[in-house]
Length: 190
Image 1 (cartoon, rainbow, N blue to C red):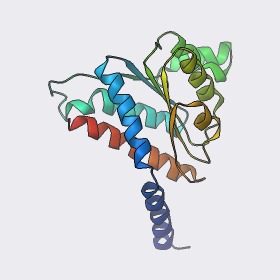
Image 2: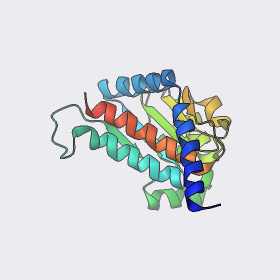
Image 3: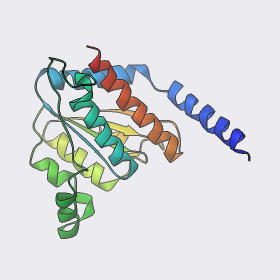
């Protein structure tokens, strides 16, 4: 396969995945995030590997990007954080208990009723994401899943979800980042 044909195939499949995003689900998720924003609730975003990078990017854009390029827009700020960036705390929980606990144990310190927890998992089966979503549900938080590969348990447990209809990790992760940008740029223009 040539680079030209590979590129064309990849982009055609990615366009189809983007075109299949259910607008009603996007609207509902934006409304949930807006409700948290308007009511000074916290938003936590979690993911592993490439999804950890997407979680960090999403939080950066919510917390700073929504304020404009210079961050000087005079508007309500998002209370958003990712739990994937604290290496010391993540490795402490992983080493002393289990990697499955790295997000739920951090979340236990912060999450309250009405907060939002967004789990990003291409497979929808990451045990540490599942445990965190279960804890968030128990605490009365609103839970959102960004999934692929049929959604897995994350799709079943989260109150809301967008499941990319693909089993290609790269394209699922591409669409998850598109969703994060779409949501953040919507709030930036308000």
